[in-house]
Image (cartoon, rainbow, N blue to C red; front, side):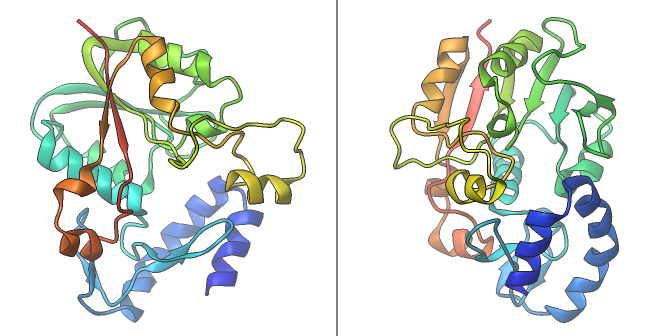
Length: 256
C-alpha cells in the first residue's frame, strides 16, 4: 500500500489524482471499520488511516472518508472552535481548495465563497497568485494552505494576499515547515525531480520554510499569530484525530 501511494503521488499529475480520488474514496471505509481514529471533519471513525508522503510514508495520516491530512484536520478544528467561520457572514477566497473542504465550504450559505488556482479542477477562477484579478481590500478571509512553497516569487504572492485582504481580515497561510531550521532554504540549481523531492519534500516545491517564515509575513505588513493549536488539545485528542503535534498555524491579520 505504501509503495503504491508513493508511486501515484510522484508520477501522476495532481489534477488527475483529484479526479481519481472521487472514484476510490467511497470504497475505502468498507475495509477500515473501527474506532481508533476519527476524522473531525465528518465525524467518521476507522481502525486506521492510510499512509501518505512523497518521500517517507507517514502512517495513519490520510483519512479514508475525506482524504484529509493532519493539517486539514487541525485547521478544521481551529476554524470550528476558535473562529466565527462557520457562523458569521464573510467573503472568503480559498486558494487551491482542498477536497476535504471544498463541498462543505460551498454549502455554507452565510459565506460568499470563491475558489481560485491555476490548475485545480475545483477552482472557480483560474488565476496567478502573484497577479490576482481582485480589487484591493476584497476579502474578509483568505485560505491559502500549502501553496506558497510552490511559488518561485513568494514575496510577490504574499503582497498580493495582503493587498486583497480587507483591513481587519484574516488570512490563514499554512506551509510545510521545518521548525529546526532558522532560515528558509531554496536552491534553483537543483533541477532533478527526484533530488528535489528528497531535499524539498515534494518534486514541485521550491523551498523549505524555516522559522523566519513568520517574520517574512510580518515584513509584508501582516500581524501574525503563531498558533500551536495542538498544545490546547489533550494527548488523546491529538492521537484520535491523527494530528501533527506542534504544527503551527500562521493566522495573519491586516491591520485596520
